Length: 127
Image (cartoon, rainbow, N blue to C red):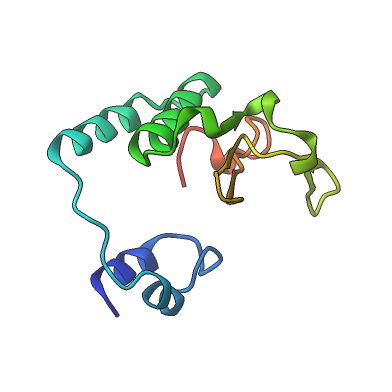
């Protein structure tokens, strides 16, 4: 198992995102090391996150646009996300992604975030 796969396996996702075996198959090279400036900027963005919707929006914007390099104009945000992207949860509630990236070649990345009152488990922390 490669070093980046070991790091991936340490994340608490239970293999639900991508199994370590598939990680090596589809992403054989390790990600490039972040520059010190980018690392410090990410640290500041994470430190500023206090669990509120406002600070979460800023953090999502930084990570999904600035850090990833995906253009801001390709993102749909919050109420701007088309209702076609709504899904029904196991409780029957309809949920929409907080952010939606639609790439130029038909790619899509939906980012779901728990509601503020949805669970105390998610209050004031990233996971």
